[in-house]
Length: 119
Image (cartoon, rainbow, N blue to C red):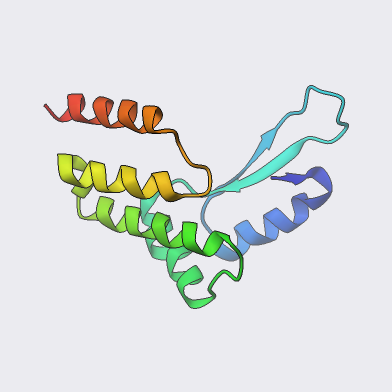
């Protein structure tokens, strides 16, 4: 997320990739500046634009490991692996290793919800 002063930078990123959107997160606390973030949600855009870019221009931060796990999850989803019990568990285990880790309880709830939809 970026402050309003950085909105121009986010717009340049959006213009460069030509996918995604910029969203505002209105602040209602004692901060004077709203926050903005650039988001790409379409799986096709992630697989065909964002992931290839970061495969060429690799991240040089701690986020590199999370990116690789994220990319692997999307590849599994592209092959509909997330629709199987084994694939859903594999993806959940990868998500557990990512930076913003979900608790085991949350992962179990997600898997239970996914499994009930596929039965």
